[in-house]
Image 1 (cartoon, rainbow, N blue to C red):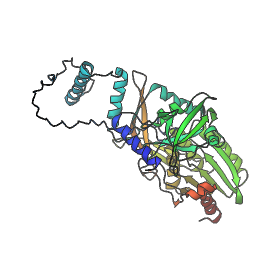
Image 2 (image 1 turned 90 degrees about the vertical axis):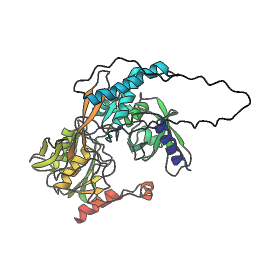
Image 3 (image 1 turned 135 degrees about the horizontal axis):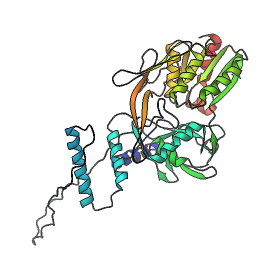
Image 4 (image 1 turned 180 degrees about the horizontal axis):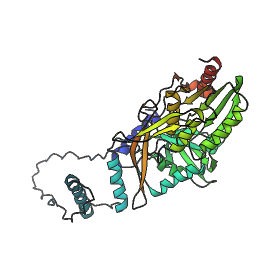
Length: 439
């Protein structure tokens, strides 16, 4: 068994014996009221050993000491407002179990707050919704740092992959992780020797980030390598490059939007104006690796490229919700354009790409998008933690579901390993070809 498979097996075993939270699909933002967090279900397995055979002996053995099974005598906890009788009865059982643990458990129990959070995460894990999650107080600070556009870290974005392992989703050129040899697709198995099996993205980020100038050691599983790699990375001040732009061959303009943070629209609008002043024949909007961001920014970015009409709608569990529209004044409504997307284009990226695709404004080129189209409402709890609750889904102008589905490009182009090793970008090449040849 190679190293990656071996570590995957270890992670599965770890998940079977521990209840831990996992979280966001990407370091960055989820669109809507807040950044989305993922919560992967975990399972607690109790192994009951088979009773040994009784062997007759010439000398009778004294009976083994026994204890009469006890029942906790506990006060009934106060009923929560609006709780049904079934709910009260179910939580009474939980309360009884908690009291029995305190009474009889041989080892040391976690502090009540930690136990309660673990129990809540267990409940959330049964919802089959990776975006409804509990965020610890210290981890929620990361979100406010992201929205400021800078932070101390290693210059990489991470996500949970399909195996619920922490994977490098993107790298900032010239930043510490890139310089140290970390690659997109690397699976981070441990940080400073501490396994992060089962960690959420935000929990992993909390370990990886730290003061500029300090060094961390990442244990990496990399495809094609039979042994783990140990990579030391010195943290630095990371200023997120929200927008990059340039002119390409054949007078084609190119602009990349990294995320939909609070400065996204202003910076994109400025970059586009400079490009449009050069009278390009076409425009490539690159949303690859863009994890999303604020809803308001998504609508405003779409408005740059669209005339009046629907950008997206929000539907709650009853089918109700607002519709968001673009206006008539966008500066790039007429220029021929295409949009580049991939499996890391998520949330607000999918709102914009879906609107441009549905309204026949641009062709999507690349790979199927991530499929995060849900809205999370953050609720502050009394202990300072935050409960993020999925309250609605986003739909494209043609009422297509994004969540769990993603967007299928009009022209699918998937880079090969040879492309990546050689530094080729077949998706960008196809976009250029489409704009130059109009097909």
